[in-house]
Length: 76
Image (cartoon, rainbow, N blue to C red; front, side, top):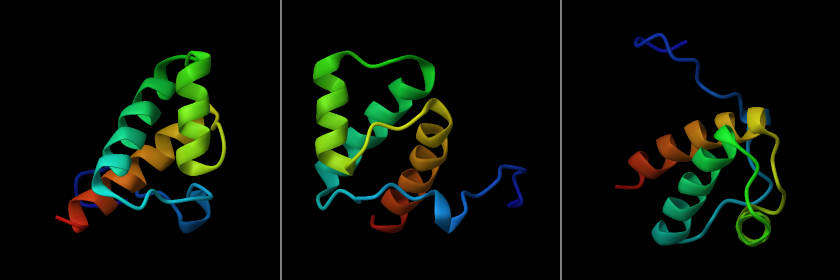
């Protein structure tokens, strides 16, 4: 756990593909956030699959979103 009490995702919990651009990374974070709350519509599912390689479970989406947010902040 980090100093704020949030657990940091383990390396084994990375998506199969990491988006290559800042715009794609931002879009994936948004889609994963929506996925944590509900099933995505077919078009959004396909977009997410295209960007990261798979359609994650809600639990995976939560971990991946957290990891990609940290990655995004590190790249700024």
